[in-house]
Image (cartoon, rainbow, N blue to C red):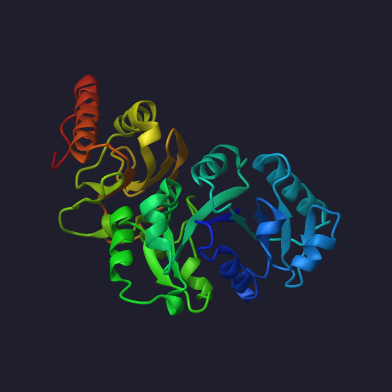
Length: 339
C-alpha cells in the first residue's frame, strides 16, 4: 500500500516551504508530489518551467506532477508509470492542494477510487501564525481546511508579534482531535507527520494519534466548538452490533452528509470481540471499515470523533442508541453487558 498525505492550508500559509524542507529529508526521499498548478509550488521552478513532461524528477530524487484532467486520472497514470519503471519507485504520495481548495473532495476520491493500492495517511494543514487568525475570521474555506486536519502545523511563528495563544486556542476549538506542531523556519521533524494508514496494518501509536486527544480522554468527552464547527467524541463502553453501526453511518451520510465534515473512530463490534473496526468518513462518503487484529492500546472503548457543522451531539448520541436498541429488539439479542 502507498500512503497518501494531503497537504492543505490557506493562501500564503507555508505549504510549499514546508514541503520543500520535507523533500530534502531521507524519510521523504521516495515521494511523489501532486500539485494543482506548477506555478504554485516553486520546489525547483527552473526545472519545472523547462520541462515539457507532466512528470518531473526533482533534484532530490522525488517526483513532481500536476493534476492533468482529474485526480483519479493523474493517480492512475502515476501508478502505471511506476509499474513500468519509467518514474522513480515512490513509496509515498503528497497531494498539495490550492490555498483556496476544499480538501473534502480529495479525501472522498481517495476513499472511493484508490483501487486497493492507495491509502490515506493523513491530512496536514498549515496555519500562518501572522495572518492565520484573520483568515479564519473571514474565509470559510480556511475553517474547513483546519477542521479536516489530522495534524496542524503552525508556520511563521518567528515572524509573529504578540501572544499566539488566542490563535492556538481557536485551532483547538475548531478541531480538538488534531495535534498541533510548530514549524521552525518552515521545517519540522518528518516523524511528526507520520500518519496512520486506515487499514488492518495500522500502527498502534499512529492510530491513537489519528484519533486525537478528544477520543483518548478517559473522562466525559466535552465538545469544543464555535458558532459554525463543532468537534466531539461519542464514547461507548459496551460493544455495538455491526448492523447498528452500519445503520448509524447510513443515516448520518444520508441526512447529514454536507454538515458532517469528518468522522473517524475505532469501534468495539459485538460480533468480533477483540478485533475492533476502524471507520472513516468525509461528508457523504465512508471508507469500508478496516478490521484490526487486536486493540492498539489498553483502551477498548468505542470512540467516534465527529467534526460537524450544526449537528448536535445529543442527536448523534440518541441516534446511535436508537439504532442499537432497534437491532437488539429485532434480532432478539440479549442486552449486552453494560448496556
